[in-house]
Image (cartoon, rainbow, N blue to C red; front, side):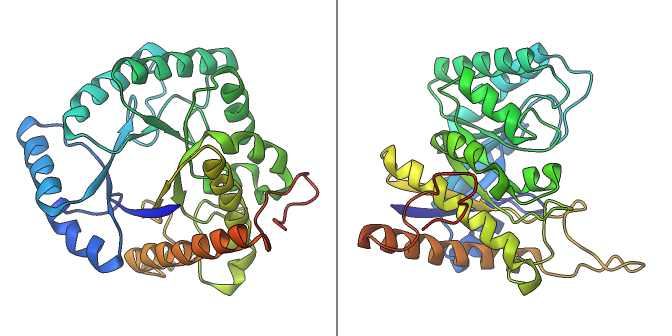
Length: 300
């Protein structure tokens, strides 16, 4: 299975031409970014992607930015979702990564909303992968599981760092739910959460080794599910970012680490990790199969 890495535009001020040298130097394959809202800006963005030969994942947020407008109705979200698909489709993204819905909606509303969203994506013949994200519908494992049971065609962008923060624990205790959702995993966001937050100061820090290992066990389960479904390419966007996620020193607000260095480290580590996982799986040993019970979180 081929591994493709995408540079997040979260916290990046430039455009595709500015990003291209970083992408190439890091051995990444493309960018994940929202489509500009203006016509001229969209055209220039599309031309830059083509000129720089960048793979492109288009980001959609419905009814607001990363946190939705609380007063927006499901109909508002669906209207915004469809308009942004129509706007972004001419750029021919690999797929749309979508932050959709609202955490406060009742379960029945969530199910109806995502059934309609999947229908809209199918109508426009595009692939949409819906992100697990705080503030959004898929802010915890259980509502995500319940919607996936009702909407089997649902594809997920798995950013489980949010769930670690929401649940205030590493997710090995929720292994049965992880395995149930694994067949829905389409795209991964490579960020490491810890029980008190969605982003560790640095994923290489030994004091957070247990958090890194827990996320990596989950990613192996997701990769296994993708292989079983015939995926020949798996995608990841290392997504350590700013906006209160990046740890800073008190009084000076100086960042404790460099975001691009962290994201490139995460990309290198997961390229190494996937290669080792595939070698073990193909060799018939090591951590090649998913754990089969909640009490056996390690892949053996």
